[in-house]
Image (cartoon, rainbow, N blue to C red; front, side, top):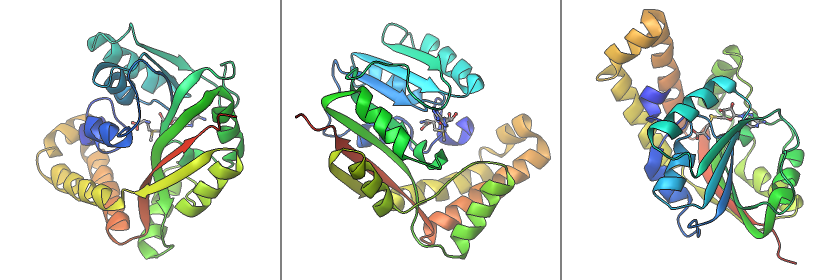
Length: 246
Ligand SMILES: C[S@@+](CC[C@H](N)C(=O)[O-])C[C@H]1O[C@@H](n2cnc3c(N)ncnc32)[C@H](O)[C@@H]1O
């Protein structure tokens, strides 16, 4: 995944996408929680490029956290970035701890989003921001179904809902001024570029990591994802909302 998405990322767009997601948000000197921090790319970018005060990354997967820790060390970001392994469920933070909670490509793994958003609201300071982006079902067309089935066949737990439903759930859990911005066209373009890279310059590196069969599987997966994005089956939205002040 990192070969396709760039060092530190398990989602497309890399550091540039972090800048887009955080555009208009005051990050400097802020305390940020990165839920599902994965390989640590976002946490490091926030600390180093956007001058966040502190970034705390949490994830349920020790193997990705291990690689995130190495990235933090390589980037000498340990003074600002801390990482911890967590169990799914309640966060081990007291209420009103963070100015910003970020989550990208994480909410789509939750069957029930209410407890997640309730916890995020609890740990945010009044006026604090929830921000991120995620995958959504646009139309349940053939391309969507093929992509959805592929993920299930791989044993991956994705639960796609519509962006409108997601927005409703965030609002119902107490957030104000919740906005959704469609990023699907850019993501479709990135997915198409990924198809070409996997066919050409990434072919040898991927074969050396995944073997021939793994490479063919990755190629198929990349193509199916691009087709679902380009045919309006799945999409990605940025979301932002605020914990009420009063
Ligand atoms: C698709 S990856 C995205 C990682 C990172 N946000 C990025 O954009 O590169 C999803 C991550 O969420 C983590 N995750 C899934 N469920 C979680 C939960 N309940 N709490 C924290 N992390 C979770 C996974 O282990 C994985 O690292």
